[in-house]
Amino acid sequence: MNSEQAPNPSSRITLSDQVDRHGMRRVRIDWRTTELDVETIVAAYDDLDAGLRASGAGRLEHDRAALRDRAREAAPVGGHHIGTARMAASPEKAVVDANCKVHHLANLHVAGAAVFPTSSHANPTLTLVALAIRLADRLKTIHGVAQ
View 1: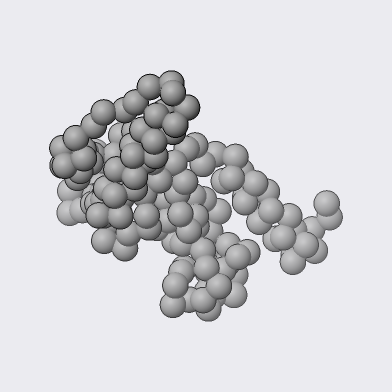
View 2: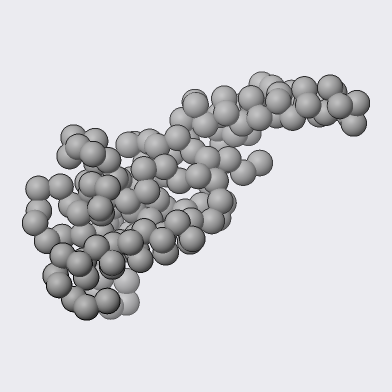
């Protein structure tokens, strides 16, 4: 099962006290799931079962309690660390605005998946590239750089 996780402020990426061979602090990832994530997985299984039964194609038999337990214990595999500098209209809800500009700073922008307000469930690359191109075009316009 691969599903989108709900934004969770308890999930964090911070610097640890450990350093790498270059003396740079290592990253510590604290990635947590929520009960909404668990219930979303259960609902998806239930919906798949209902669709299979309605179509006559089959059925999906599953133990809902065991599924919940497994979903709570599962570590994200192949996940994308997204949303650490989220985008929203107000600085109370996010780090950057719709133009990827850091709130309250005149000339600092973020180009990366960190600005995504939510992760979706699949590859973020095309959305990331589109945002970066849009930001590059905006910065060229602001700074009077010829296209």
